[in-house]
Length: 172
Image: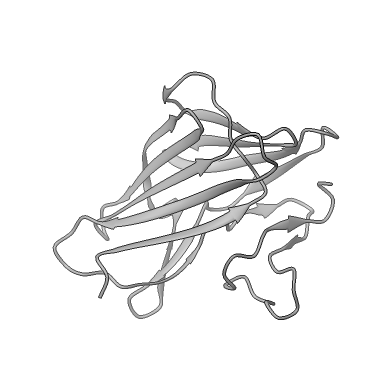
């Protein structure tokens, strides 16, 4: 059984920051994309993704992540209380906690001048009992009126395939 699990995925969004410190909203951007991270009712949400070249904005909903644990039970980021959302020099860090599972999630969004960013999430078991994490979906966003493709190769047709980028139909 695991006491800590880390998963990483590359997505086509990157971050920028102005001032550092805890906030209720962070605009995360690259030269071509912008992602709005916001606190909504004590939960972390991506509320929109913008193509900065065309100005097109996609409104998003849904949790930031989904995990499957133990015997197939699932929880999402909506089941975690957002403790902090901090700007950093290269992006942002969100710390969330699920008291029922004694599980802390730390999401790091790291970017720069490149066209993509890394979204990394680290789960830390703060309880006395071991917790087996089975799967982690690092992006679970829904976009209004938009098809999202999680797989780009026929040999990797499922969302659970490792390292596949997330594409939208009309953002570009």
